[in-house]
Every structure is written in C-alpha cells, then in structure tokens.
Length: 403
Ligand code: SF4
Image (cartoon, rainbow, N blue to C red; front, side, top):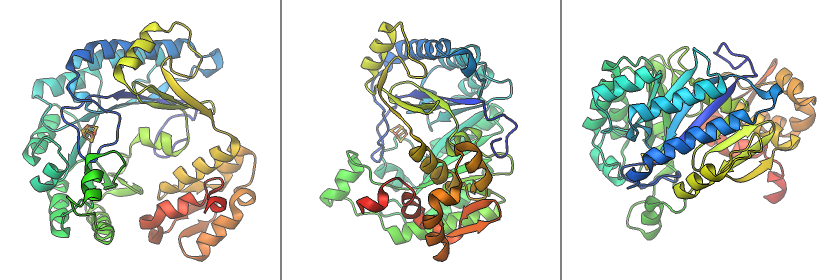
C-alpha cells in the first residue's frame, strides 16, 4: 500500500507532459517551448496515440489500472478543455483509470476563465496545482513569470468558484534579493487562502537558464544559502501552525490531502510518462522521450510497433539494476518525512536486508544525529532536512569512491 491511499501496489500512475508556455521563466530548465500554438492540436493527437499504443502493447500480466494521472508541463491550462477531456478519456479507456483516480492538472496564473475552469472540472480534473511562486512583483519579474500576484489570486479564486476542493500551490524561496520579511508575507498571504497543499522549493540555479547566466555574469546577485535555510525553517513553522502535515521534504498537505501521484514516485512504484521529454519507469526499465516537439510528433505518428513499456518516441532508456533500485528506494523513501523507509518492505521488495546493504552508511549518519532508526522505520532527523541532498547522495552507488 502507498501510505494514505486505498490502492494496491499494482496500480500504475500516468504523467502527461504539455511542453508549452506563454513565456519562459528565467530559472526554468524543463522541456518547454513558447510560440507553438499552431502545434497544440497535433500534439494532443500524438499524445493520445502514444498513450493508446503503449497501453495496447502491455502484456496480459501487466495490465494494471491507473490510480493517478498528472497533467503537467509546461502550462497545461493553455490547452482547451476539450483537448484535456480527450486526453483524460484516452487514459480512462487505455489504462482503465480508476473512478476515484486523483487527476491533477497544473494551472498557471492568467491562463484561466471561470468557464474554462468549470470545463476542466467536468472533463475529470479533480486536483489543481497552481504556480504562484511569490507574492512580490520584483521576484516575479526577476523570474520572468509573465504574470502578477493579482493574477495568481484571481486564478485561485476561479478554481475555487469552479468547485475545485483540492488545490496545491507552488512557491519558491531563496531568490536573489528576496528578504525574509517578504517570504513571511508571501506565506501569510497564501496560507490565508486556505489551500489543501503546498510545494515549496528552494531556488536552484540550473545550467543553461537565463537566471544562472545572469548570476554567473554578475548582473544579478547570487542567492544567499543561509537566508534560504532560514526561509525553509520559517515555512515549516508557519505551515505547521496552519495545520499542515509536512510529509515530504518540500511538500505539505492537510491531513489526507497528500499528493497520491508524487507518493507513487517516492515509493519507487511504476509510472508511465507520455509527451515530449517525459520519463517513465515500469518493470525495472526507465525511459525518456524525445524532447523537441516536432520530432516527438513525427516519431509517434510514424511508429506502428511499440516495445513495451517504452514510448514509440523513446530517446533513450536504461535498465535499473538491483543496486540502483535499492538506492532509489532508500533515497526517495527517506524524503518522506514521517513514512521514511520500512526495513520489512525493503526486505520484501529486494530479498536482502537493509542492514546488509546499507548498514555502514545508516550507522554513520545515525551517529551524527541525522537519521532516526526506530523499530521498523528509518527516517531523516529534523537536523537533516536542510542537508538532505548530501546525506541521500551517500546512498548512491559509487558516490563514496568517486569523492
Ligand atoms: S511556467 Fe513553469 S514550465 Fe513554464 S517556463 Fe515557467 S517554470 Fe517553466
């Protein structure tokens, strides 16, 4: 069982990537493109074909139902409701999407009307993820978000008016020039909206992004890591005070409103990824799909034979061997703050004891008070949340040797 859900481990998850945005954010390293409106319709048709082809190629013993669908991007709310409806219906037919499936769609501020929000809901979307990022215009401008905070407020209200009762907000902290006071104000303002869920990410400077280039050239100040750490702690306090369950390092939900889709990733359970640049992981195989939209469309349209579980537009793939699967199970598992990693489940899944495989590393971090080992569970200690990347990297194969 995935914690907090009522589904069996056999269920799969589906991710659809919509690689279109109105503007490119300065920090964004996702596979997204602007000014491609003329491709939307053909892209949706290719996505439907890809979903159907992969589903049809499944062997009879791998025809599990899907219990979550995540339509992400990019900006899926640039698509028309009838296009979203076609995508959901295709998943429903091809993957036997469960009647109570969590169906999340990402909205961006300024891309919604009430009628559009209602139509998405009628199409089957029952959870919204809204990219708010900041309540301050100077940060939104630095991020080149292309919208104001007022746009985010309006979009949130429209989603509520349309009847969405499960809304998650994305926020970013640790931006250049962002003060602790501003971050506190952002948190207080959006907490007062009473969303069901938050994802809060520390800004990272990704290679080949505009923001990274600005910082490297000295045009923009570098983010302050110590200040970002204070912002994270402040977010934890305020979210806890507001009744949120801090269930993953960067995620908070009201009780029973944790993201079922993301829990599938964190539990190393299977998911199919569709669309340009998407990743999938099924039956021990990870694959990734061609990134350029035109190449993706042409490949899907031109392929008739699919090698399950891969996409017809696969760019590359790798077999995840036992060593890597164990490392990922531990690393993603430890990110789940309360659940952590079950010693029993590790043994059931891999046929080896967690202690035999990772005993030295676990004791090393326990002795430094970064891990709790109690009963059947291994969990990160609070002191580890801000340095989790360093600790979790220690469980990757060959990390120590390479250092
Ligand atoms: S809206 Fe999201 S996906 Fe689009 S450019 Fe901005 S960060 Fe990237």
